[in-house]
Image (cartoon, rainbow, N blue to C red; front, side, top):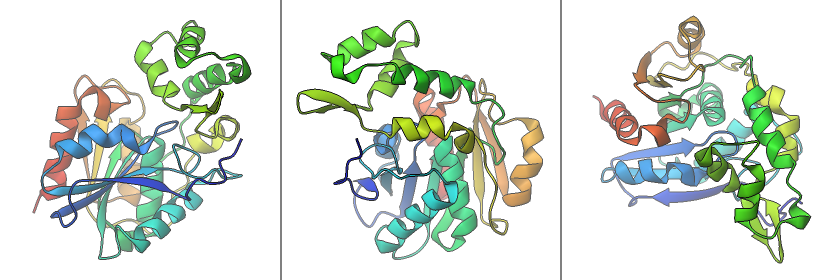
Length: 267
């Protein structure tokens, strides 16, 4: 069921207003803004962070279609009203959120100071089977016959053996009266996986500094992607975090925070 009372974009601010640096965090598929809370706190003092629930995720509104351009425009409208009303801000985006961040920089370059793209490339992802499996597993849960969150975890254990992955996904299971519902728009996200995996850059090249952060064990940023990165983001620096997979910021938070802080505060 769509939550008609949800704000267009739900956001949380971490840090004191007036900090030297302002940074916006955009999460990945089936995530929430709060996934970056640890990083935002680690950047203090000196940074004010805006943690965004992207459309169809967290406590933000649901939509009828999935579009990176529309998502970027929605974020842009929100930033112009408040967080970026006084000028450019930094933007950090992971995976799906990285594509939103790229679209934002290309379509609204006046809003973005420095851009950090985390473990995704400006190309179509050839294989979305992992996400199809995960979202498909969630869709098998009968929410009308679910006594507790722990029961949901037990019922998903065979299909999603990794405890951490189940826990991340089940953050989206929300108590609703006497029952449960998905906080994210599961049906739309599952139906739109080909679009989520795709990406068509839109706009002139973004000519400000860009940091690409890749996980050493992740397949999502490859050497053959570098020409596309530099075509649309010519001032790109690529950093690979050793030992990290796709969820770089949660797997290696200290190394990730250090890389982001160094890049965003560089002269």
